[in-house]
Length: 259
Image 1 (cartoon, one colour):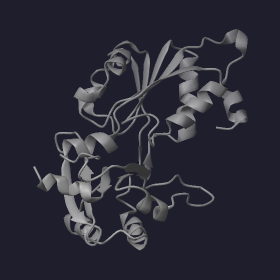
Image 2: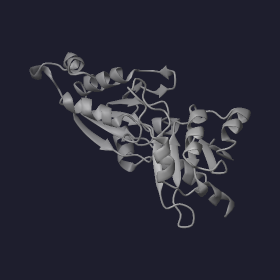
Image 3: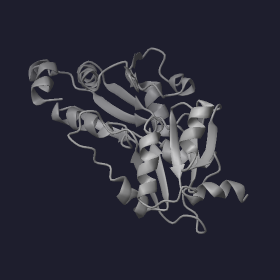
Image 4: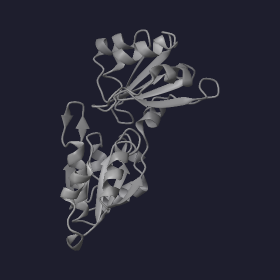
């Protein structure tokens, strides 16, 4: 948000009650992965703005008298624009003591938590971050894929496959990424997989490099699609494999066959 936008939602100093906003990571889906601190905040909060990927089991933890606002974002279907979400957080913090912004995974890992933190602090709102387990770590673990292993992978990179709209230029250097680590974890990359795969192959990764796609990570309906760079795009099309999903690229995927 611009400073002008922020000023429009900030009440005069003499007429302000300022609560605190907690940016809480809900984890990737399994309610057992919710942190104790996050759960305690949900049980005592006044207002919750929650994302689309937060599971029903975690939403059930929310204080029954708290105001619940869906602020989720799916590709092509945003309940609230980012600016509207930030505006609401500021307004609610001027009315209530405990406001929770409940975000899937971890607030700061491809979750726009940094943007919200900056805008809230600019508005003079107290903010605390409660980290959550990110899907890029948890989903492969639930699929039996360790991201590092002495015999398979000593380095891992996390990267988004869906850069924000309106950037003046793409900033992901897929050539550098392909050459920098033995394991690549791509968030939100399923839609752009047909563009990503040729770039990492052109950077030198063999078409035989294993790929695991994991959807609905850590949930009861988690599923995996295993292939290689040479055929994974075709497999996605044939199986109608749909988001939300992450991709794990690298020989570590073969660990599934060793145990």
